[in-house]
Image (tube, rainbow, N blue to C red):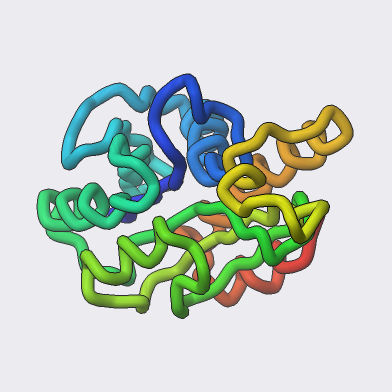
Length: 189
């Protein structure tokens, strides 16, 4: 069993913003797998699917981004999963828009949702799929305004494709391992 978490902020106000790249990717993955993400469990909306013989728990935390770890910790306890069975999809401002970077483990960098997860579960030993949302166009622009902003029309198709690939990367981690996912998806976009 694997727990795949898509990070974002809940509510219509934040829908389709850059900071919700992880949740957007997870929603497309759920659609592909025919999973309905509707059951509230562990401060998250969850759904179940199978990929081959592997059971997947798909989760959208309903906490705000900075508290994502509370939801992930509760889900991991409920399903009795170790960190190696967790996969997190999330946005990354250090990657060009539409690029992916799969990693087997690591620090949170500047991402507050990941900081919350690492603190809450006490481990950084889990794979993650970072989805590039591009750099701020102007250094004077507030980071919060940028990540909570919407994509320009010229970015939408590239980001949609990135969300699809991020879901595929998560499935590759499940079926073939993180090294295979890194070889197949890193830098693509």
